[in-house]
Image (cartoon, rainbow, N blue to C red):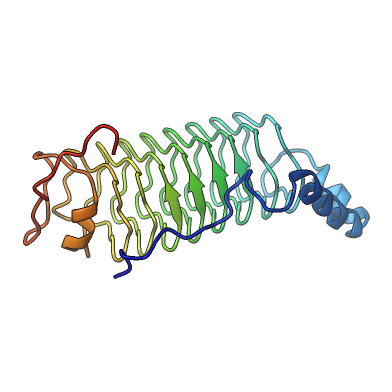
Amino acid sequence: MRFARSLPCRRGPGAASVPRAARLAVLAAGLLAGGTAAEAACGDQPRQGMDWSNCLKERVMLDSSTLVNAKFRGAVLSGSGFDGSDLRQADFSRAELVRTSFRKTNMAGANLEKVLASRATFAGANLSGARLVKAEFQRVVFDGADMTGADFSDGDFHRTSFAGTKLGNARFVETLLPRSDFRGAALAGATMKGAYLYRARLDAVDLTKVQDLVQDQIDIACGTPETRLPEGLKAPGWWPCNSDD
């Protein structure tokens, strides 16, 4: 287990050591170096199978668009909107999604590996089977989403809200979840092996069918007398947490 270690110092979206203007200039230079083909791809109209990989596309509004199998690898999409869009099997790996909105999108099977996201929202979205391995999400909202079978392994989800989210059979292997909110979430069949649950909100959550939970994880999480634990685990005597915890 790794609970004794401190949280890693990771670069989050909007907190880069390199100034943002310089970072975007490097991205733009890379696109120009790609020549006409790269420029044409970034200018493509939104459609199924489109390829905006490594493109600078901040504040684009693509609500209710059909973008199945679209590619956004390494793209900067901060401030953009995809509400109600069809993004099944879309590839957002390594993209930047600061304050990006995906409300009620269909992102079943989407790839969000190594995505950097802050204050984005996926409320009510379908992310069943999505891949979020090694993603870094801070203060992101997944409330009411369907994330059945999603893979969060090795990711960092600091202060992320999973309130009322379907997380059956999801994988949280070695995932950082400090101060994340699971109130009202459905977690049957999910695995929490090695997950870091410091002050994670588990108030009244049914954890009886969660796999690989150990007492050390429960001891640093926040719950209530209504929280249901797997056999052999017990609630800490200091539950519930104070409001300022």
